[in-house]
Length: 120
Figure 1: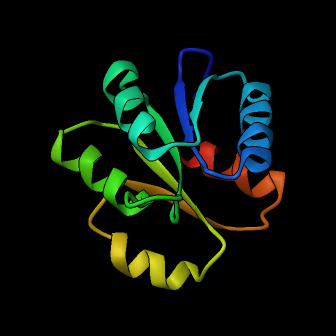
Figure 2: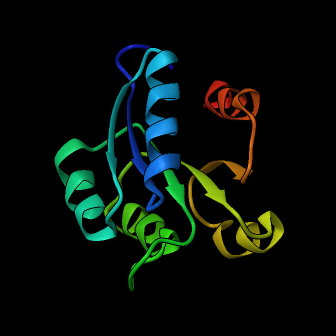
């Protein structure tokens, strides 16, 4: 992953979203973000990112799993890094059929996020 890598961060908690964006920019990647799942779907279509950092539970009727499903159904090549405040085991069981690069449980450390990007 390098400077030509585009990332979409989808996280409804503004403080977490801002921290993720700042950190990923430091990794040298182009970062877009959204706190709204509907807007995130629009940005997916417009950007076609290489990586989507995706919160499992988003405010509203669209979940992170719904967005990952959309990525798969549209045939997008984006790798997903799921983040969750819940059980990673539960999320893993529900998303194993998606192109998931990593699962991170909140609160996670910078080293874990960097490691997830290094696997891609």
